[in-house]
Length: 272
Image (tube, rainbow, N blue to C red):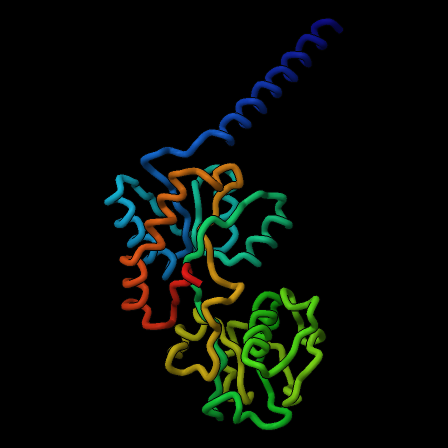
């Protein structure tokens, strides 16, 4: 029995030492000369590459790791395999933290991939008739986002306490009596001809050959709550190396690249 007790004591002691080691690692300041940044492939990766060039002029090396989904960059960040990531808006981050028990925080605005409202039948939203049909993304985040655009432009009114996560059941004023038809977001470009107007995410619009700036009849503004952020673990929120990267990202060089490369389909949003 004494031998078993000693073994258990050793296990407990080892566990305590390991826990202390993890805690000290979590509180440790980041490398002053290098950060590992996670992004999703596409515009976020392209822009991060330009920000890395700017950061290099200030003596900061940026290693970029690209991901093909939206969960892994946050998982890798929370587990310490990344120092920061850049790809998500705050509503998504809040939901991830709640679902996974993590403490990831936004530290600097980056870009907005503006959702657009499109129509093959009408040249402006004002032209839509009474009872017009509207294709609405059927997932909660994008459905709410589309409703927010319509409210911002004065076409509907959402209940005051439901503005951040509104559904069609939270509309209290609908002067045009718009009929909302919930559709899978990725399929809406193919179904645009079947409705009077529809909300389409930028990535799906671009893939379908639709230019948000030129083809939309309404476009999400850059003060949208769906602006993307650079995100870090809570203990690194005020780390000077993180702030150096934020400064590099929010530079005129990066802004110019965004404007020239994306021609309005991606917006620099850090001054909003």
